[in-house]
Image 1 (cartoon, rainbow, N blue to C red):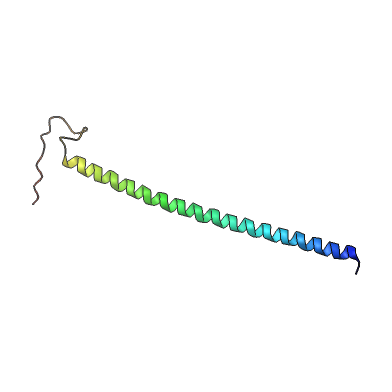
Image 2 (cartoon, rainbow, N blue to C red):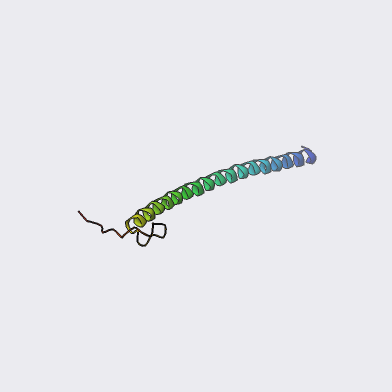
Length: 84
């Protein structure tokens, strides 16, 4: 075989490997981006639910303590909570 033909085959194989590794690297990077995005989205969804729960709890507590609620009317007397 001629040495030029061997050189072309080796260079062609190197280019093929480069393209293969480049394509696989791209696919892996896109997969990592999608997984990261889904993790962040799920985490933010859970945090949103927690914030909503805290707001509801604060609203419930502020209704139970109208004397300390700055948004309650001033002429409302404090109520006593009956545990029964």
